[in-house]
Length: 121
Image (cartoon, rainbow, N blue to C red; front, side, top):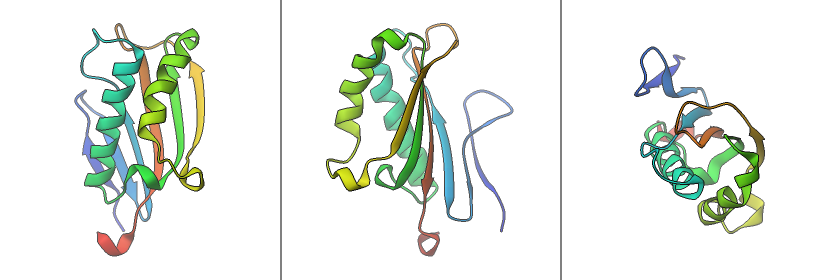
C-alpha cells in the first residue's frame, strides 16, 4: 500500500498524508491579519478539506495538537474549537495545546491524526 500525500502551499512538504487507515493533516490560516479565533476557524476549515480529500472527516479525528503563538489567547481558540468539534462527547478528539514559536503573523497551527474507511478509498 502506498503513502498518499497532498502538497502544502510551502514547498517540499505535504499538507496531509495517509497510509492505510490513518490520515495526518496540518493547517494554518491563510489570512494572517485575523485574530486567534478567526485563524483557528480558517485552519479547521482547511483540515476538514484535507481530511475529506483523503477519505476521512473531522468526526473521525483521534488527536489534535494545537500550537499557539500566545497561550494566553487559548480562550479565543476555544470559541472556534467549540463550533468545530462534534456535539456528541463520544466523538471528541483528544487535544493538546501548547505555546510555540510560529512564523510571523501565524497565531495558530493545527495538526491532526484521523482514521478513514478504506472501503471508501
